[in-house]
Image (cartoon, rainbow, N blue to C red; front, side, top):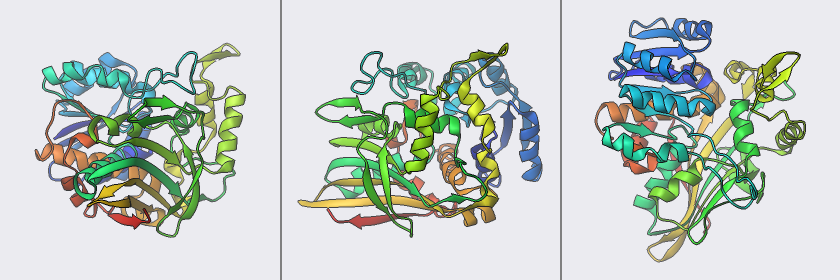
Length: 403
């Protein structure tokens, strides 16, 4: 498989490191707006002969098409902030390449009732074009990170193998990670974190469809395994809620994230000050987006690994019926920062995100997964994916809970 990777930040670097030794990888082009960063990753990985380095503006659809054609890429792998998703998704289609991302196209809140009704939902732009992709014989595999991605694979597995009837699919994410030396240091892209945490969270119910609530709503304490323990989780806008109901029969889908009071307080302050704004304003004659300024002021998550300790847990909590009895199961994966740094040189959060698209690439490259159109992870057989997780260094576990 010949891959064009656009975005060589923390996740992009981890993805490249995991893909590098795979026999199915014929060529990987590392493309980033920051050419020096792409070159740095290339050298860090040992300057592999089947790797190339390019500079690219991800918002320039025509330039991306030219780069896909230059390298005869079979797949465009999108590893940049989702503000660029539409341009990259369309460029792959124009160039006749398959496409994969880890976060779908952005939402727009309802203009008058943002905390009750959905406006433009995550992924609407992509799913509206599904028939065009299908007619062209191309696959856009959307939401193929850890959450969304692995969590969606778990939801499909639960439906196929663990339950006769599903009441709720609830994705739950928590961690005990500590970053030494910083008062505030997000372990993932702050641009994306602001987007998903301050937008109205979406919930799906069979009787009601998709609807929204205020940010940080419905707090609950979820007891995470692996020594992490109880963490308060709140509703956050996330793709699983938009994906799972399309493929898995259930009554409710939610996503809750363990953010912590301090983190939530910082996000609320950014919102009150208008620093969450992604639209450009003029400052002393220069046009800048406040959110980009916030991102530039904070440490790059890719550089935090050596200062981090602890674990992060991502998983899918499923409740329902099996053989006439109530059942509750948590399917999860725990990434330990020390282990991730030792094995692939990346911190736990980005490493846990990156291994999932690489497994998906392997399944597509070997023909185990096949499809066309715009599809989420739930559209595919989950077993081959889960069988490969341990070999990639990220084993999963299934924990029975009190129903």
